[in-house]
Length: 89
Image (tube, rainbow, N blue to C red; front, side):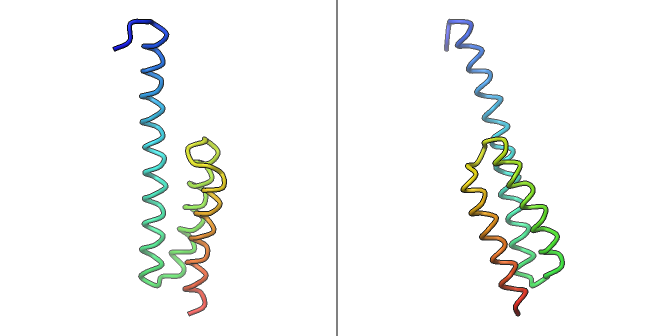
């Protein structure tokens, strides 16, 4: 355990940030899973709505610096391709 006051503050800050990061990453994963479930069931309309919500959640995570902007772009591109794959059918 740290003895210096500033080090103790940094530990507390790091713990708070870690919890926030975990919460946001979990929300991103959950949104993607919901979207993929809708795609797998073939429900295009629901998947279309979930795509917008999921993209918004991913953008917010990137804006907060929790995921890299390129990673966010890649994830959004991947889910958009999945939606387009069921739109053709």
